[in-house]
Length: 261
Image 1 (spheres, one colour):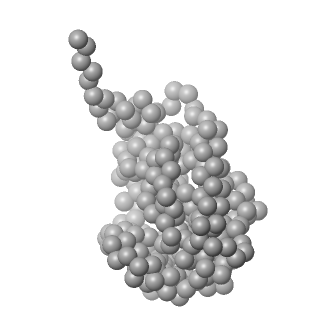
Image 2 (cartoon, helix red, strand yellow):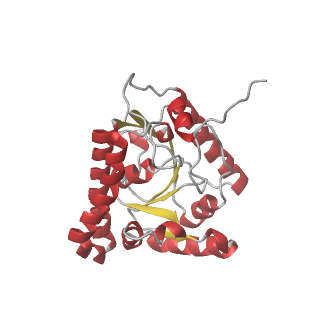
Image 3 (cartoon, helix red, strand yellow):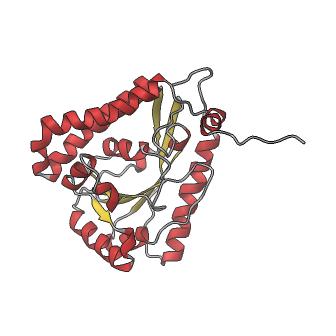
């Protein structure tokens, strides 16, 4: 009788195209290093939200530059005509760390809705809080939803883009998760158009944040959702648009042959 051996994590990663080479390890050092250097030299910018966001954009640009240099991962933006420049709620597919970094650059005045645990992380959390991020304590139930909505209303200016990940956590590219009610609560409270964003970043930067695959990430801004609708209608439409388009972007992805990081 033949015994089937379990697939080790490294073997599974290589089977899926993710590898742990020198480039990936260099990038793992690059990300925290630039964050620390920026904090040392630019910490006075934490004094205002606007200046904090400027410093975050510097970090994000350097992070994506390092991602391209060390890991061979670039990006392509579609639907730029729908990219918000003014007040908007931006609902984004969550597959990896990449979309958090990239949207810091792509949008002119981004404010993120983040888990409280992330706000509590040294350095990252300091800048997130200084730039006006809205913290969500998911263990607090209904009171957390009310607090999030109140903080979001305070954070929203005439040119603010409030970014939320409706799934509430990073999800593998081949999975779908239920969208959380918080996105609808914000849509109702803010009275701003909701711009869905689809992408395939999880194919190239694994949701564990430690695994990479060379190629070009595709991100697409979709037509804004506007108008009065109930929660079921809104979430059904939002999820269908983001998930269907993300799946098409995943299916259309092209990887360079023979390139490893």
